[in-house]
Image 1 (cartoon, rainbow, N blue to C red):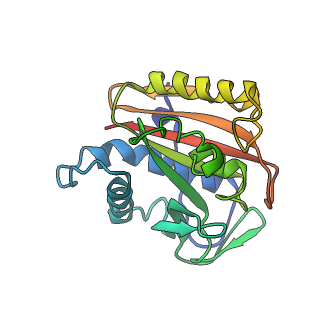
Image 2: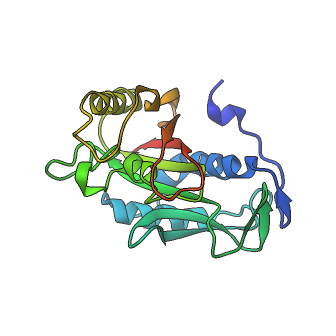
Length: 233
């Protein structure tokens, strides 16, 4: 049984919710990826910014009253300093998840988005790291530039070449390489940070997996769990 078959949504309205609400929002986005990709009205653009804008518009257009009546998806949510994350989900009304209050100005969950393969010279590993440039997807979560106040976040991979299992193995190879060369990156990487729990739905071209990472910088939690959501474009 794959992830899509396992997901069951309950009703969300304004009020107090368990921490599992974050996972439900992430699952909701994952479920929408194939229908967004296959939407005949979607502009067939390939750049990351255009895909992010298209996806956030699509998510906001869906009638989600039965599941997430309070969630709005935003573009370019500012994080630490001048850094911004690609898409965020914020409540339309004040809500409490766990013991934390969220307003429309506080994202419940954030999504960093990357094309695979990453275009450009010397950027092939940007899903994981930008080395000293600090523009790697996972890297920014590790050093607290993104999601410093969250312990569960998501990354969306737009797969424009190769199949999901290829990228699962390739990304894990990049992470393992970083563990062997401690001077190669501004982050310290550990073999435990490789992607795990890979599940694919080949018939609709989506896959997902998880990873857990140690963090540095000014963060509220020394570890962050990343949900990796991939769609074959």
